Image (cartoon, rainbow, N blue to C red; front, side, top):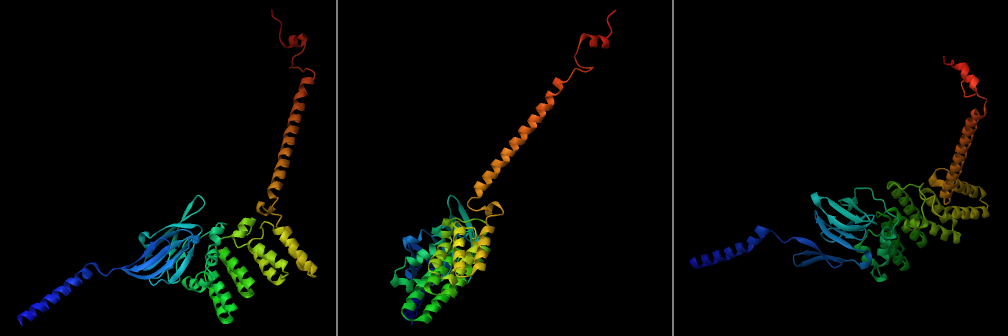
Length: 387
Protein backbone atom coordinates (compact mmCIF):
# COMPACT_ATOMS: atom_id res chain seq x y z
CA UNK A 1 0.00 0.00 0.00
CA UNK A 2 2.82 2.38 0.79
CA UNK A 3 4.46 1.77 -2.60
CA UNK A 4 1.16 2.42 -4.39
CA UNK A 5 0.64 5.63 -2.41
CA UNK A 6 4.17 6.76 -3.18
CA UNK A 7 3.72 6.18 -6.95
CA UNK A 8 0.41 8.07 -6.95
CA UNK A 9 2.01 10.97 -5.13
CA UNK A 10 4.83 11.10 -7.65
CA UNK A 11 2.43 11.13 -10.61
CA UNK A 12 0.38 13.90 -8.99
CA UNK A 13 3.55 15.92 -8.34
CA UNK A 14 4.64 15.56 -11.97
CA UNK A 15 1.17 16.63 -13.14
CA UNK A 16 1.25 19.72 -10.93
CA UNK A 17 4.73 20.59 -12.12
CA UNK A 18 3.47 20.37 -15.71
CA UNK A 19 0.67 22.79 -14.90
CA UNK A 20 3.00 25.28 -13.21
CA UNK A 21 4.13 27.12 -16.41
CA UNK A 22 0.53 27.53 -17.54
CA UNK A 23 -0.45 28.89 -14.13
CA UNK A 24 2.49 31.29 -13.97
CA UNK A 25 2.63 32.56 -17.53
CA UNK A 26 -0.75 31.61 -19.01
CA UNK A 27 -1.35 30.07 -22.43
CA UNK A 28 0.59 31.23 -25.49
CA UNK A 29 -1.23 34.12 -27.15
CA UNK A 30 -1.91 34.29 -30.90
CA UNK A 31 -0.05 37.19 -32.52
CA UNK A 32 0.07 38.68 -36.04
CA UNK A 33 3.45 38.53 -37.78
CA UNK A 34 4.45 40.20 -41.06
CA UNK A 35 6.96 38.15 -43.03
CA UNK A 36 7.93 39.90 -46.25
CA UNK A 37 4.57 40.65 -47.88
CA UNK A 38 2.62 37.94 -46.05
CA UNK A 39 0.62 38.61 -42.90
CA UNK A 40 0.52 35.52 -40.69
CA UNK A 41 -1.61 35.04 -37.58
CA UNK A 42 0.10 32.45 -35.40
CA UNK A 43 -1.05 30.73 -32.24
CA UNK A 44 2.23 29.47 -30.88
CA UNK A 45 3.53 27.13 -33.58
CA UNK A 46 0.11 26.80 -35.22
CA UNK A 47 -0.77 28.97 -38.23
CA UNK A 48 -4.32 30.27 -37.89
CA UNK A 49 -4.56 32.26 -41.15
CA UNK A 50 -2.45 34.27 -43.56
CA UNK A 51 -2.81 36.87 -46.34
CA UNK A 52 -0.35 37.83 -49.08
CA UNK A 53 -0.22 41.26 -50.71
CA UNK A 54 1.33 41.83 -54.18
CA UNK A 55 4.02 44.48 -54.47
CA UNK A 56 1.76 46.52 -56.79
CA UNK A 57 -0.44 47.39 -53.80
CA UNK A 58 2.26 49.51 -52.16
CA UNK A 59 4.18 49.41 -48.91
CA UNK A 60 2.89 47.56 -45.85
CA UNK A 61 2.76 49.06 -42.33
CA UNK A 62 2.15 47.18 -39.12
CA UNK A 63 0.69 44.87 -38.10
CA UNK A 64 -0.90 46.32 -34.97
CA UNK A 65 -3.25 44.38 -32.70
CA UNK A 66 -5.69 46.28 -30.47
CA UNK A 67 -8.62 44.67 -28.68
CA UNK A 68 -8.37 41.45 -30.66
CA UNK A 69 -8.41 43.30 -34.00
CA UNK A 70 -5.37 43.28 -36.29
CA UNK A 71 -4.69 46.46 -38.30
CA UNK A 72 -2.47 46.50 -41.38
CA UNK A 73 -1.61 49.44 -43.61
CA UNK A 74 -1.60 48.55 -47.31
CA UNK A 75 -0.76 51.50 -49.54
CA UNK A 76 -3.27 54.26 -48.64
CA UNK A 77 -5.62 51.80 -46.89
CA UNK A 78 -5.84 50.34 -43.40
CA UNK A 79 -7.48 46.91 -43.18
CA UNK A 80 -8.90 45.47 -39.96
CA UNK A 81 -9.03 41.69 -39.44
CA UNK A 82 -10.61 39.52 -36.77
CA UNK A 83 -8.69 36.80 -34.98
CA UNK A 84 -10.07 34.32 -37.53
CA UNK A 85 -8.91 36.36 -40.51
CA UNK A 86 -12.24 37.87 -41.54
CA UNK A 87 -12.06 41.43 -42.90
CA UNK A 88 -13.92 43.77 -40.55
CA UNK A 89 -13.54 46.81 -42.77
CA UNK A 90 -11.23 49.24 -44.47
CA UNK A 91 -10.27 52.87 -43.81
CA UNK A 92 -9.52 55.03 -46.87
CA UNK A 93 -6.77 57.59 -46.30
CA UNK A 94 -5.34 60.45 -48.43
CA UNK A 95 -1.78 59.12 -48.65
CA UNK A 96 0.39 56.07 -48.22
CA UNK A 97 0.30 54.75 -44.64
CA UNK A 98 3.75 55.00 -43.06
CA UNK A 99 3.07 53.96 -39.45
CA UNK A 100 0.45 52.61 -37.04
CA UNK A 101 0.51 53.07 -33.27
CA UNK A 102 -1.90 52.52 -30.41
CA UNK A 103 -0.98 54.96 -27.68
CA UNK A 104 -3.67 55.03 -25.02
CA UNK A 105 -5.63 52.28 -26.71
CA UNK A 106 -6.48 54.52 -29.70
CA UNK A 107 -5.26 53.56 -33.16
CA UNK A 108 -3.43 56.43 -34.86
CA UNK A 109 -2.29 56.40 -38.48
CA UNK A 110 0.41 58.50 -40.13
CA UNK A 111 0.24 59.06 -43.88
CA UNK A 112 2.78 60.60 -46.22
CA UNK A 113 1.82 63.28 -48.74
CA UNK A 114 3.84 65.30 -51.24
CA UNK A 115 6.31 66.82 -48.80
CA UNK A 116 4.05 66.61 -45.73
CA UNK A 117 2.65 64.08 -43.26
CA UNK A 118 -0.82 63.78 -41.69
CA UNK A 119 -2.09 61.93 -38.64
CA UNK A 120 -5.52 60.40 -38.28
CA UNK A 121 -7.42 58.56 -35.54
CA UNK A 122 -9.29 55.34 -36.23
CA UNK A 123 -12.37 54.27 -34.31
CA UNK A 124 -13.13 50.56 -34.29
CA UNK A 125 -16.46 48.80 -34.24
CA UNK A 126 -18.44 45.93 -35.68
CA UNK A 127 -18.58 47.72 -39.06
CA UNK A 128 -14.81 48.12 -39.20
CA UNK A 129 -12.49 51.10 -38.71
CA UNK A 130 -13.63 54.63 -39.43
CA UNK A 131 -11.56 57.80 -39.62
CA UNK A 132 -12.52 60.38 -36.99
CA UNK A 133 -11.16 63.40 -38.86
CA UNK A 134 -12.41 64.65 -42.22
CA UNK A 135 -10.34 63.19 -45.06
CA UNK A 136 -9.76 65.36 -48.12
CA UNK A 137 -8.38 63.34 -51.02
CA UNK A 138 -5.71 64.94 -53.22
CA UNK A 139 -6.12 64.53 -57.00
CA UNK A 140 -3.59 61.71 -56.97
CA UNK A 141 -4.49 58.58 -58.99
CA UNK A 142 -2.18 56.42 -56.88
CA UNK A 143 -4.55 57.14 -53.98
CA UNK A 144 -7.95 57.56 -55.60
CA UNK A 145 -7.61 54.56 -57.96
CA UNK A 146 -6.03 52.15 -55.51
CA UNK A 147 -9.06 49.89 -55.09
CA UNK A 148 -9.54 49.61 -58.85
CA UNK A 149 -5.89 48.72 -59.41
CA UNK A 150 -6.00 46.14 -56.62
CA UNK A 151 -8.98 44.44 -58.27
CA UNK A 152 -7.45 44.55 -61.75
CA UNK A 153 -4.23 42.95 -60.48
CA UNK A 154 -6.10 39.74 -59.58
CA UNK A 155 -6.00 37.07 -62.33
CA UNK A 156 -9.32 35.88 -63.69
CA UNK A 157 -9.05 32.49 -62.03
CA UNK A 158 -8.52 34.06 -58.60
CA UNK A 159 -11.41 36.58 -58.62
CA UNK A 160 -13.78 34.46 -56.53
CA UNK A 161 -11.17 33.74 -53.84
CA UNK A 162 -10.04 37.40 -53.78
CA UNK A 163 -13.64 38.63 -53.47
CA UNK A 164 -14.17 36.26 -50.53
CA UNK A 165 -10.98 37.44 -48.82
CA UNK A 166 -11.74 41.15 -49.39
CA UNK A 167 -15.51 41.75 -49.66
CA UNK A 168 -14.91 45.49 -49.10
CA UNK A 169 -13.54 45.97 -52.64
CA UNK A 170 -16.54 46.54 -54.95
CA UNK A 171 -14.46 46.20 -58.12
CA UNK A 172 -13.68 42.60 -57.20
CA UNK A 173 -17.39 41.98 -56.62
CA UNK A 174 -18.24 43.54 -59.99
CA UNK A 175 -15.72 41.27 -61.72
CA UNK A 176 -17.33 38.35 -59.91
CA UNK A 177 -20.77 39.53 -61.12
CA UNK A 178 -19.54 39.58 -64.72
CA UNK A 179 -18.21 36.03 -64.34
CA UNK A 180 -21.54 34.85 -62.95
CA UNK A 181 -23.48 36.55 -65.76
CA UNK A 182 -21.29 34.97 -68.44
CA UNK A 183 -21.94 31.64 -66.77
CA UNK A 184 -25.69 32.26 -67.07
CA UNK A 185 -26.35 32.79 -63.36
CA UNK A 186 -28.10 36.17 -63.44
CA UNK A 187 -29.31 35.87 -59.84
CA UNK A 188 -25.75 35.44 -58.51
CA UNK A 189 -24.62 38.33 -60.73
CA UNK A 190 -27.26 40.69 -59.31
CA UNK A 191 -26.41 39.55 -55.79
CA UNK A 192 -22.74 40.47 -56.37
CA UNK A 193 -23.79 43.89 -57.74
CA UNK A 194 -25.90 44.54 -54.63
CA UNK A 195 -22.96 43.60 -52.42
CA UNK A 196 -20.75 45.99 -54.38
CA UNK A 197 -23.23 48.82 -53.77
CA UNK A 198 -23.28 47.96 -50.07
CA UNK A 199 -19.63 48.81 -49.55
CA UNK A 200 -18.27 52.08 -48.16
CA UNK A 201 -16.28 54.17 -50.65
CA UNK A 202 -14.91 57.69 -51.18
CA UNK A 203 -16.50 59.64 -54.03
CA UNK A 204 -13.73 59.05 -56.65
CA UNK A 205 -14.18 55.29 -56.27
CA UNK A 206 -17.98 55.65 -56.50
CA UNK A 207 -17.55 57.46 -59.85
CA UNK A 208 -15.21 54.75 -61.15
CA UNK A 209 -17.66 52.08 -60.03
CA UNK A 210 -20.60 53.92 -61.65
CA UNK A 211 -18.84 53.99 -65.02
CA UNK A 212 -18.16 50.26 -64.86
CA UNK A 213 -21.71 49.48 -63.76
CA UNK A 214 -23.00 51.55 -66.68
CA UNK A 215 -20.73 49.73 -69.12
CA UNK A 216 -21.76 46.35 -67.70
CA UNK A 217 -25.44 47.13 -68.27
CA UNK A 218 -26.60 48.13 -64.79
CA UNK A 219 -27.84 51.74 -65.32
CA UNK A 220 -29.97 51.88 -62.16
CA UNK A 221 -27.00 50.73 -60.08
CA UNK A 222 -24.81 53.33 -61.82
CA UNK A 223 -27.28 56.09 -60.91
CA UNK A 224 -27.22 54.93 -57.29
CA UNK A 225 -23.40 54.99 -57.29
CA UNK A 226 -23.39 58.55 -58.68
CA UNK A 227 -25.84 59.66 -56.00
CA UNK A 228 -23.58 58.22 -53.30
CA UNK A 229 -20.61 59.98 -54.90
CA UNK A 230 -22.49 63.29 -54.57
CA UNK A 231 -23.26 62.67 -50.92
CA UNK A 232 -19.72 61.63 -50.05
CA UNK A 233 -18.21 64.64 -51.84
CA UNK A 234 -20.61 67.00 -50.06
CA UNK A 235 -19.71 65.44 -46.72
CA UNK A 236 -16.01 66.04 -47.42
CA UNK A 237 -16.63 69.72 -48.20
CA UNK A 238 -15.92 69.67 -51.93
CA UNK A 239 -16.57 73.18 -53.35
CA UNK A 240 -18.22 73.17 -56.81
CA UNK A 241 -17.15 76.78 -57.41
CA UNK A 242 -13.46 75.83 -57.61
CA UNK A 243 -12.31 75.09 -61.19
CA UNK A 244 -11.00 71.56 -61.79
CA UNK A 245 -8.26 70.67 -64.26
CA UNK A 246 -8.43 67.67 -66.58
CA UNK A 247 -5.76 65.88 -64.53
CA UNK A 248 -7.64 66.40 -61.26
CA UNK A 249 -10.94 65.32 -62.81
CA UNK A 250 -9.21 62.21 -64.11
CA UNK A 251 -8.09 61.37 -60.59
CA UNK A 252 -11.65 61.92 -59.35
CA UNK A 253 -13.08 59.23 -61.63
CA UNK A 254 -12.82 60.99 -65.02
CA UNK A 255 -16.58 61.53 -65.51
CA UNK A 256 -16.06 63.95 -68.43
CA UNK A 257 -14.25 61.29 -70.47
CA UNK A 258 -17.03 58.79 -69.89
CA UNK A 259 -19.61 61.45 -70.80
CA UNK A 260 -17.78 61.99 -74.09
CA UNK A 261 -17.95 58.23 -74.75
CA UNK A 262 -21.70 58.24 -74.12
CA UNK A 263 -22.16 61.14 -76.53
CA UNK A 264 -20.11 59.30 -79.16
CA UNK A 265 -22.47 56.34 -78.74
CA UNK A 266 -25.54 58.64 -78.84
CA UNK A 267 -26.72 57.29 -75.47
CA UNK A 268 -28.39 60.52 -74.42
CA UNK A 269 -30.41 59.00 -71.58
CA UNK A 270 -27.24 57.91 -69.81
CA UNK A 271 -25.38 61.08 -70.86
CA UNK A 272 -28.06 63.15 -69.08
CA UNK A 273 -27.26 61.40 -65.78
CA UNK A 274 -23.53 62.00 -66.12
CA UNK A 275 -23.69 65.61 -67.27
CA UNK A 276 -26.06 66.25 -64.37
CA UNK A 277 -23.42 64.86 -62.01
CA UNK A 278 -20.77 67.14 -63.54
CA UNK A 279 -23.06 70.16 -63.35
CA UNK A 280 -23.68 69.60 -59.66
CA UNK A 281 -20.22 68.58 -58.49
CA UNK A 282 -17.63 69.88 -61.03
CA UNK A 283 -19.40 72.49 -63.20
CA UNK A 284 -16.21 74.49 -63.87
CA UNK A 285 -14.05 71.64 -65.10
CA UNK A 286 -11.44 72.21 -67.79
CA UNK A 287 -13.02 71.71 -71.21
CA UNK A 288 -16.51 72.14 -69.79
CA UNK A 289 -17.74 74.89 -72.17
CA UNK A 290 -16.89 72.76 -75.22
CA UNK A 291 -18.61 69.70 -73.77
CA UNK A 292 -21.68 71.72 -72.76
CA UNK A 293 -21.84 73.18 -76.29
CA UNK A 294 -21.56 69.73 -77.82
CA UNK A 295 -24.35 68.39 -75.63
CA UNK A 296 -26.55 71.40 -76.45
CA UNK A 297 -25.93 70.88 -80.17
CA UNK A 298 -27.04 67.23 -79.97
CA UNK A 299 -30.18 68.24 -78.07
CA UNK A 300 -30.99 70.92 -80.65
CA UNK A 301 -30.51 68.46 -83.51
CA UNK A 302 -33.15 66.25 -81.90
CA UNK A 303 -35.64 69.08 -81.70
CA UNK A 304 -35.08 69.83 -78.01
CA UNK A 305 -34.24 73.49 -78.53
CA UNK A 306 -35.48 74.57 -75.11
CA UNK A 307 -33.14 72.17 -73.28
CA UNK A 308 -30.28 73.15 -75.57
CA UNK A 309 -30.74 76.85 -74.82
CA UNK A 310 -30.90 76.10 -71.08
CA UNK A 311 -27.49 74.39 -71.25
CA UNK A 312 -26.03 77.25 -73.29
CA UNK A 313 -27.31 79.73 -70.73
CA UNK A 314 -25.81 77.66 -67.93
CA UNK A 315 -22.45 77.60 -69.72
CA UNK A 316 -22.54 81.40 -70.16
CA UNK A 317 -23.40 81.91 -66.49
CA UNK A 318 -20.15 80.21 -65.49
CA UNK A 319 -18.10 82.96 -67.15
CA UNK A 320 -19.29 85.77 -64.87
CA UNK A 321 -19.03 86.43 -61.16
CA UNK A 322 -16.02 86.01 -58.92
CA UNK A 323 -12.46 85.27 -59.95
CA UNK A 324 -13.20 81.55 -59.60
CA UNK A 325 -15.92 81.87 -62.22
CA UNK A 326 -13.97 83.73 -64.89
CA UNK A 327 -13.01 80.56 -66.70
CA UNK A 328 -9.79 79.69 -68.47
CA UNK A 329 -9.14 83.34 -69.51
CA UNK A 330 -9.87 84.72 -66.04
CA UNK A 331 -6.29 85.71 -65.23
CA UNK A 332 -5.92 87.48 -68.60
CA UNK A 333 -9.09 89.44 -67.88
CA UNK A 334 -7.79 90.45 -64.45
CA UNK A 335 -4.44 91.45 -65.97
CA UNK A 336 -6.08 93.67 -68.63
CA UNK A 337 -8.31 95.32 -66.02
CA UNK A 338 -5.29 96.00 -63.79
CA UNK A 339 -3.41 97.56 -66.69
CA UNK A 340 -6.36 99.83 -67.47
CA UNK A 341 -6.61 100.94 -63.83
CA UNK A 342 -2.87 101.72 -63.67
CA UNK A 343 -3.08 103.74 -66.89
CA UNK A 344 -6.09 105.68 -65.58
CA UNK A 345 -4.24 106.39 -62.35
CA UNK A 346 -1.16 107.67 -64.20
CA UNK A 347 -3.31 109.94 -66.35
CA UNK A 348 -5.04 111.34 -63.26
CA UNK A 349 -1.70 112.04 -61.56
CA UNK A 350 -0.36 113.70 -64.73
CA UNK A 351 -3.45 115.92 -65.02
CA UNK A 352 -3.12 116.98 -61.37
CA UNK A 353 0.53 117.92 -61.91
CA UNK A 354 -0.37 120.04 -64.94
CA UNK A 355 -3.04 121.93 -62.97
CA UNK A 356 -0.59 122.64 -60.14
CA UNK A 357 2.03 123.87 -62.59
CA UNK A 358 -0.42 126.27 -64.25
CA UNK A 359 -1.52 127.71 -60.90
CA UNK A 360 2.07 128.21 -59.79
CA UNK A 361 3.00 130.00 -63.03
CA UNK A 362 0.25 132.65 -62.80
CA UNK A 363 1.71 134.68 -59.79
CA UNK A 364 5.05 134.97 -61.57
CA UNK A 365 3.51 136.78 -64.54
CA UNK A 366 1.27 139.13 -62.44
CA UNK A 367 2.30 142.98 -61.94
CA UNK A 368 3.98 143.68 -58.57
CA UNK A 369 1.58 144.72 -55.80
CA UNK A 370 1.97 146.97 -52.82
CA UNK A 371 3.81 144.55 -50.72
CA UNK A 372 5.73 142.99 -53.60
CA UNK A 373 9.13 144.04 -54.83
CA UNK A 374 9.12 147.12 -57.24
CA UNK A 375 10.74 150.53 -57.81
CA UNK A 376 12.71 152.49 -55.22
CA UNK A 377 9.92 155.06 -54.92
CA UNK A 378 7.56 152.49 -53.66
CA UNK A 379 10.07 151.49 -51.07
CA UNK A 380 10.69 155.09 -49.97
CA UNK A 381 7.00 155.64 -49.48
CA UNK A 382 6.88 152.82 -47.04
CA UNK A 383 10.01 153.58 -45.01
CA UNK A 384 10.96 157.06 -43.67
CA UNK A 385 14.24 158.58 -44.85
CA UNK A 386 17.00 158.72 -42.27
CA UNK A 387 17.61 162.05 -40.48
